[in-house]
Length: 112
Length: 111
Image 1: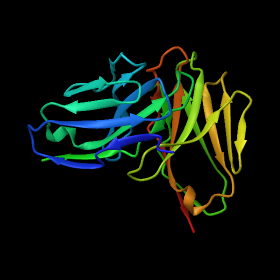
Image 2: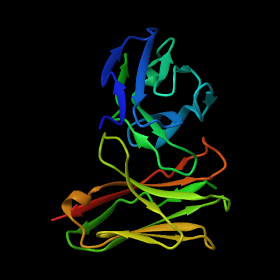
Image 3: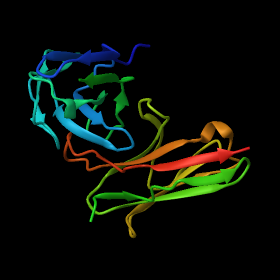
Image 4: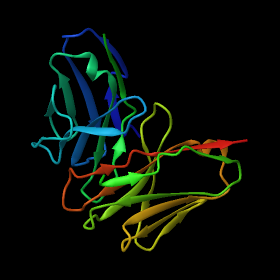
């Protein structure tokens, strides 16, 4: 029962480097999401994909891009990492609008 | 006004106590409601969905009051392992994107 799998689990980058965070789900869910959570704070939606082939901005999209590669995979790219992007990144998926989300166990990203 | 509001706590209660959290929401069109728990530095995990008729899962009971626009979570006979942050989640049916997380209520159970 893999559920939602995120890679890598930890990463340290230097300012200006680029990186792609990977997310894959094996539950045949339609919608996928990327969140960030800063220490002591709540979840903030970065981007989401309501269905394969569509992506939309969330609350804090600046500095990020996403790709819904297929129904299973939804990646998040930082083109030029900044220290303000140091955070824990969670990917989530759900079957449809009235269903709960299932989360991956997160990617802990530090940018120096 | 925030779309979903929770008392941030922390609630610090002794083991065995009963504790209740409320969560208010502003969008009367909201259709789906959930409680999640999040342990420190871990991912949120679904605790239970909240149905109009109320629902119970062991020591946990969730209620929905549409007229007053709030949901509640009751934990009976609390255990040390219940220590976590509890997140209220509201989702209007019409939008795949519109999932609103409350900022969470911290609960600490002391021996």
